[in-house]
Image (tube, rainbow over all chains, first blue to last red; front, side, top):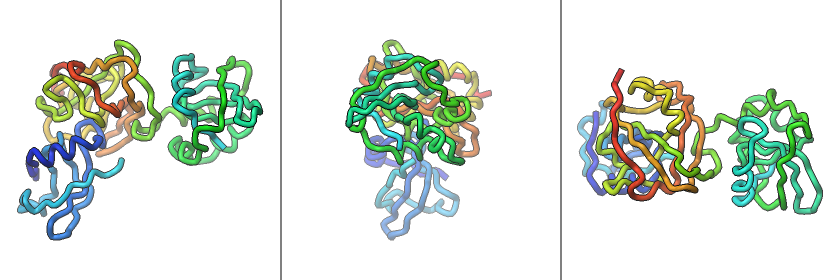
Length: 69
Length: 220
């Protein structure tokens, strides 16, 4: 499933280099403290999450940390 | 021990012809004024001739590992490219390793005048391409010459190991100014795709009015 990021997250991601052409790999830090590792973001705006996170809402995201390649 | 070159030395070597693909034979004047013949890989790493077999002959040693083990710049005063027949280092045995590291691990190089690059994207509104026709720092592309190998979106996805859920049918053209800093490497296998194409990481992006398009390519 894809979670559309808002402009502030997109701006943050655009300050970091891509992992490959058109995408970045990030660790998603949730406000609960949980970290969802190695998640793909397409075009700095579409967070591609495993189906088990289908109910996740953007307001639950505390940080996106771009992984080093 | 291999030695990293400083920025000036890299710039100077880039302007001179290669001895073979990805390497140059050189004579180096070291900081203690001794003189060593050897090879420079990718215009950034000097390996003295007596160390070639020891370093390059090791099994499973990647170029990035050799680079990490290298001495930092400052050990070399001067470099002079020498003729191919001045040394016999067994380059076909060893140096092929040097040409396939990803762009993120490559040294900085500078674009030549009128050199064109291409960026494949699933998005017409690619976020790395700004409205003023500039490219955001940290964006990947490929060389125009390498992009000629790609006629369809499927081919682009395989060659550049793209991660997409929509077809990457949009192709942006980048014409950066001369001496734009980039890192050039080879796309590693990733995301279930073989890679193998040339990848160019625009370290500082590209200024406004240098990106045009997108054109489109067929999906299949």
